[in-house]
Length: 459
Image (tube, rainbow, N blue to C red; front, side, top):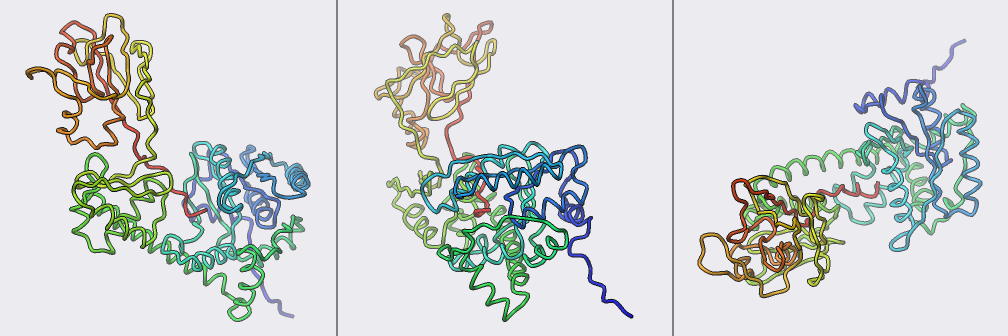
């Protein structure tokens, strides 16, 4: 009698093998499993146990209660019961899902905030997305007309907060997970809303993917390969954009319109798309990029064009493009009393002002030790060393070619009623510290677009 050998879907070493292949560190930090109570996360929890990842209690589970299920408490009870039986510590976090765009997206935003808050340096979060999830996501992105970034769909690994996120099951189908769960005697919760085909993803899961699999049994795996090809293409686009950015970006963070104009349309759009996403997590389609170029970059020289991208604004000043967060409303009447010797940093609506105490250098410290700090009201004048008479601050700022939106943010420092310094730009005549006199060196950091982590395309 002969026997047909059927390899195990998931051998005990599966998870550690996957971590090694992905070059993911699995030693040192905590290992979290995002445990919803459903099939995929229950399988993942079991695989983590079989791989011995619970050594020294490092394996933990986190359950997010979005408050959207009628039996949410029942789900929490089920997850606690499973984790207690397996000897795995479970944290339950209840979140409030805000209003705005789709409920699904708001729930995702809420739970990822929790995940980011949990992960410490070197920690790892495991999620149970599988090949069918990947196929559904790519099909949804196709229906939206997405480009390479969208079609890359769900990444297997990425940074998250201070740690990393890893999805080891992306190369396996739901059918394989079901087989493993049945063989292992696992129990899980079925989400009743999965049957509601009013939701696009459920429609694809219930009607489209089964039809595709009937014709092409390996459809989910084939679609997954297309997602990986798109991810590879995206990496190449980003590498090229990073090269072009070095040539086009100026010291103050702006992009040179002249340098951008030397690139081909495709290459320029690739750079602008990369820049917007890198700084603000913005995904700009071809139509918006065309408007950006024509209406902002190529506007008349004396214009001050702007275009909004979420909570950011793209602006042009002279021949450079800048991406800036929404500028705060400034109260020109407000005054901050700043005692530098007891407080070296002053946070203002338009940025951060820092001071370092020096002897014989920088701005002379007033006898009182107190600076009064405010913003421009109009009509300010300052006398600079080596110049005859005082100069209009407005004219000085224009001559220095400082962008209009940055002029209002600049902090003005007063000793009593006398203007003694403008941010870290100018110190008034007679206000420099003498050889043995205590002084301060100022450093002004305006509120600009910082390298905000991209949203990773909803995942």
